[in-house]
Structures are given as structure tokens and as C-alpha cells.
Length: 192
Image (cartoon, rainbow, N blue to C red):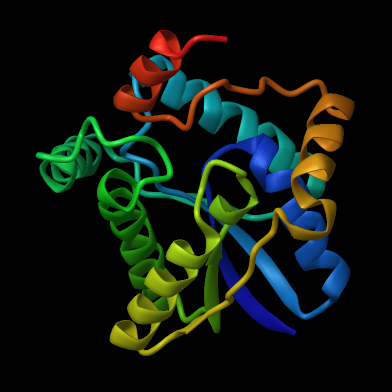
């Protein structure tokens, strides 16, 4: 089996992705939490804590890059990357692409540094994210870093519905916005 560093955005999105990857018996998965886009800090900490509880139950190894100095630098880098496209809608190439790129680049570098065979992301399980865009970025980043990217659209074949079912079964906190301050504001102003 190949070793895989899986970029994780939250516990609910990780459930069905990890289940699918483990069922394939092709990968030994390690979760990697790198999300400087998630705001406010309390939300970030809540998502990370929820993920760690789930991973511990599943006996999945966990990594992050959250020492205090690195965290401040990562948040600054994220705000710099999305400057000028903050108010583009979620799922847009304008706002989401720089955010996704930043997170996949960090995952690829970490995977390469730690001698993983490949990397992937849970982001494609969301119906609010463009899997084609994510896979295109992942493949380009993989090539630039000389590592393999596992191309997938995890929402396909009932993946998103399965993530909802598993997160309910586990009684997980399930957020109602992607994570960034702009998607949070967009969600608050969007009519129901």
C-alpha cells in the first residue's frame, strides 16, 4: 500500500473520504490539517478538535503546522493570496482557487518532506467546491513538487450524502460555511 497525506478541512468532510480510501486498500492514510482560511480562530479550533477526536477513533495518524509563529504567517499569506477577490462567490475560480492552491501546496511540500508516496484532499467531497478545479491544481502542484496527487471527486457515487450520514452517526459538529470569513458573511446575507 502507498502512503498518502490527506489534506483535511474538517471532520464531516473527512469521514466518507477516509472510509473510501481505506476501503480501497490502496493507501495508508495520514490526515493533514492545514487551513489558514478558517475564521474566526474559535471556529478553526473547533474544527481541528472535532477532526482529532474522529481520527483518534479511526486510528488515523494526524499532522498539522500550527505552531504560533507559523500560524500567523499562514493566515497573513492566505489574506494576501485572496486580496482583490474576497467578494467573489464561493465555488468561484477567483476566490477559491488561491485558497485551495495555498493549502494543496502546503500539503504537497509536507508530503514530500515526510516521504509520502502521494497526497490528496477532502475538498472535493463538498458540493460547493469545483472538483475539476481542485484536481487541476493538485496535479500541477504534484508535478512541481515531484510527488503524486490522487485525483478524485469524492462527492460522486453518494460521497457527500455518506459524509452527512457518518457525521450524524458520530454526532459531529457540522459547520454551515466553508470556513473563510468571506463565505461566512456570504452565508449570513444569503436568503434561506
